[in-house]
Length: 357
Ligand code: BGC
Image (tube, rainbow, N blue to C red):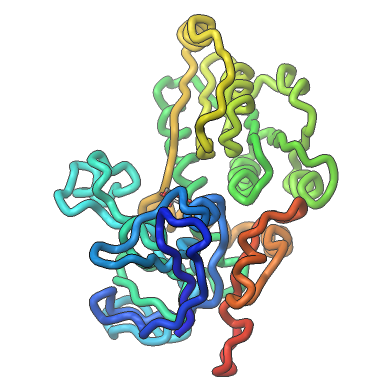
């Protein structure tokens, strides 16, 4: 079968390989891959800056945002052939830590977790993958190809879950306005959930034209491409999805008193900007603000994400997928274009067995 593999830590090592089909040890459910989504993490792995191969192997199959169709499954697994599904990325650490022990692997405390397509486990970027039923999630068949958005939606479903838990620290706090920084797939999906919550939605992105402003307006939100407008917004919640140092700082500075800033974008690091930590501390203390980081998602977040996607407008979701490329053209998928939102590698393209969506 075809599989997209890379030698982690080594740039220019990615290639479309021919591999044997996965072994039963990977799980009892066999899934035929329809598509994998590409995100910044995949680009980092292919650039040799992130990622780990499974123990004893030199190459890693990439792909952690998945959509597939069940090919075969044990009777008692809860899945049947033809089900549309997506795989959960993270597996609990073997110790396990107190978080992993109760299924909160997204909060792993010792860092020994593994992640499919990222950390010590093969991903979903191959014609077939195998998986354990408890790490597989059903996707509404009405979503069709947009079901590949489940994993990035799970990441923002977790962010919203934690924002709401933090908000519940007082009896009186009720958010009215949310600012999302970054209108990439994660930002737009975070905005979609904010709009579902009935909040006054604002989204900031540097793009001045293209689909992003329209996608935000279609959610009933206000689109900003000028950072100077942030001061007047006074959001109760900021969901920071760019990881860009200056935007992170602006996000923390503009939140309203009692506000919550969730950092969900990963910075590339090494970019220095000067900040007055004393002033930052003073503002956060005197305004009871919370700034926290959020990564990954557990099963409950995938399920919440599946429900959010089911409720969302299907044409709106389909608009987020701006390019589909065949596995053979994986290099073009990894090259970022200005008008890209979500690029997917479509395993039904170039398939010789006649199977498609
Ligand atoms: C994935 C997460 C993962 C993180 C760090 C992200 O791209 O969506 O599931 O935990 O990378 O490896």
